[in-house]
Length: 128
Image (cartoon, rainbow, N blue to C red):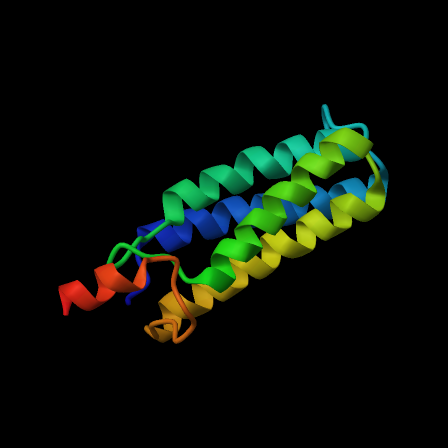
């Protein structure tokens, strides 16, 4: 796979998340963000947008590892909305950044995942 405008756009969105989180951690607030819950809203909105913009479904499947990271990011983001705790916000940011890094590395390296996919085995076999 080659790097496309989608990678650049999703990288810019993730960069805004990282800068916002860093600013929030250093100052305790960011424009309209006053607590972990507000930062989670920013992270969820921009993170979901980055996923939609940067997503590439090839051969009708998504590698399980990135699917798990995406689900963990969503769960930790929603958890932060509920409990408004710094530890859950940190976990959320860690999963978002890890998901972005692994996906971008895959696109840059051009490698296909060797991990199992979410696609049913009988469909994969019938297409070969």
